[in-house]
Amino acid sequence: MQNPFIFAMKNLTTAAKLLKLKPKFVAALKKPEHIWNVEIPVVRDNKKTETFHGYRVQYSGARGPYKGGIRFHPATDLNEVKALAFWMAVKCATVGIPYGGAKGGITVDPKQLSHGELERLTRAYTRALYDYIGPEKDIPAPDVNTNPHMMAWMMDEFSKIRGCNVPGVVTGKPLEIGGSQGREEATGRGGFYVLEELAKKLKLNPKKTRVIVQGFGNVGYHFARFAYKAGYQIIGLSDSQGGILSLDGTSMDPENVMASKLKRGRIHGCYCIGSVCDCVHFTQVTNEELLTTPCDVLVPAALENQLTKQNAKQVKARVVLELANGPTTPDADIIFKRKKIILVPDVLANAGGVTVSYFEWVQNLQNFYWTAAEVDARLKPIMVRAFNEVWEMAAKKKTTLRMGAYCVAIERIARAMELRGMV
Ligand code: GLU
Image 1 (cartoon, rainbow, N blue to C red):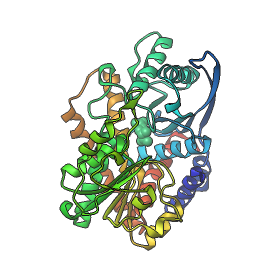
Image 2: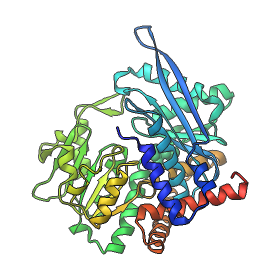
Image 3: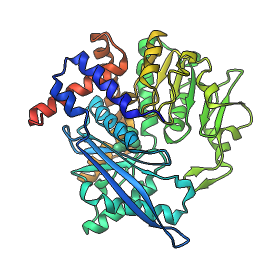
């Protein structure tokens, strides 16, 4: 895989130039504050011990405790986790929530482990990081291939060592043990609010706006559901096994597609065995074909480096709304700019997830819980305000929305560093 950390640093350098940021800030922001590498021995069901490798990168703590998810993926490596941790710092600053940025990961294919092995791995990872995480230090959350159940194990393991209940150590927990209403669908919902703001600027009519979503996990599925309900035309969907297109242009109902996908059941109650391709009413396409099909809004909601210099020229969308982290490389950004494709960056478009994580943590610290309506009433203004601040910054600096977001965020992070005397 291309190194996403190099891409992240390229974007930092461009934003720093636009902001005329002093070199000492750039030098400090090019290095994570802490990198924790952990060896995690797990007794497999055959009684043999296997050691997995895990990471936690605490990138910047200038604006508050470190915050960011944990991913379980066979391709996860230190460069990926460093990039994701940096993007968390930028994301939290873009939407103005009081956190720094962090990310964690374990190099593992969780579908190859039994339920018990997965639990032992998650608990051992939590023990290995015990000294470095906590509600006032660093608060993990779900990311690719991790879910509320794993957050429950992390919370339980941490609480056992601490000797008391500590729900605020992780977010994205099940509701019954201190999770927040609305957290599950928050990233998709936040992305939808951003789309609605953009639609106002571009005068898009949902009924005439064709949307293609790559990725049908927690993020892509809920986003597609909100967009479909608002009348947008969902003409393409995909997951890691392939994609489907509606050739006659009728909008796909994501709930129906999910129902077909779920028919073959799930591993560990979370990883689907089936695919969107099980929905036989539509035409099957490869992921690559899906990304280059003509549409109005293309929504990458899967992994990094999906839109690259190899395929960006073939993208025929008016807007790219990034719900994955880092789906577009800097080369593809340049091609989109040239083609006048408007790109709404990840650090803004997918920030609804961490924003509701922030609400969950606040509720945990107060032991006072909000209704779904209260969560939503607080999420929307944050997304709307952030969108408009980014839009105005991009206009002021005559730059892209990605650079607009980076300028908003890096300015806030640098100011916090300066005030605290960190540089
Ligand atoms: N993994 C999500 C993200 O990339 C959420 C992180 C969080 O809630 O801390 O934004």
